[in-house]
Image (cartoon, rainbow, N blue to C red; front, side):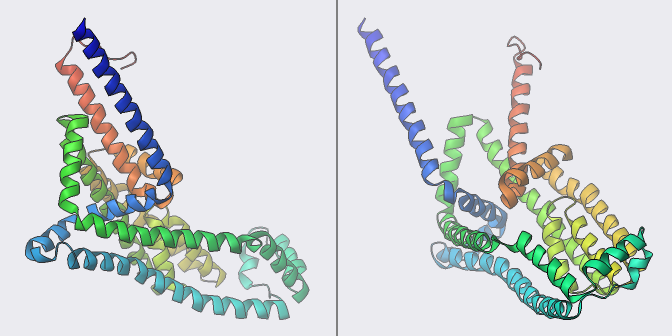
Length: 363
């Protein structure tokens, strides 16, 4: 009787402790929800640079606590801010050109370009152009409509978004510094927690997460940069306006599968607007070839090989992650899918080793 009472008391104690833990975890997630993306970014960056950082720690063990994490954090900040600075400078130059063009259009109207005559329904398009853009009054009216519908009320939203992303970026750098400084302690704690939660699968789940993040970075970031660099060369050859800026934007868009098509489509439209129809068609063909090779051969090899996933599940993870989490989902999505598939395979393997335990209905 006493033993039953003691057992019931211990069970109630465990239930109360587990309930309190769940409540505290949920409350902690709610409190830190704003900074979870920054923490995830810091973890992704730390995983990506860990091989190089581990070598630096081995070579300079005295700098583990201060200057090595500080130097790594500053280099990451530079890698992010340098392209952004280049893009802002190029955009500012382009903005001056656009402002001069708009001022001229409002003063004199927009003359109908020769290539309009080569389009299907050229007469209808030409008539609309003459009625709405050929005169200063028509051009001013159209610009006021565009400015009112697209730009109206958006400046405050853009300012808030920029401030929010700046705060997230700053906190990402702070979190990265502490992750690198306490690297060994964090790794030991995560390994211990993984073993307690998942048993023998804990280490394999951690290794799969690391492989997935690094494979995704290789397959998305590095391949995207390669696509942007290749297309920038052809933008220069074809005479696309501002080829470096457009190449940089193509590299960013190419990190999302098939995203580069939007940018080289824009480049083709620019060339078409200049009357360079042949080069416009060439850019479309070259872009499709580059994207086809990257998305159908290089990416599946890099991402699928490291995550051990069919590329269909990688693609679902990438696109679903982007839709749910934005740019962060590019890395979180495939890693999540890889860990889910690993747990599923462990479950199936366990069922095969214990045939007396039936699988759920439908398996």
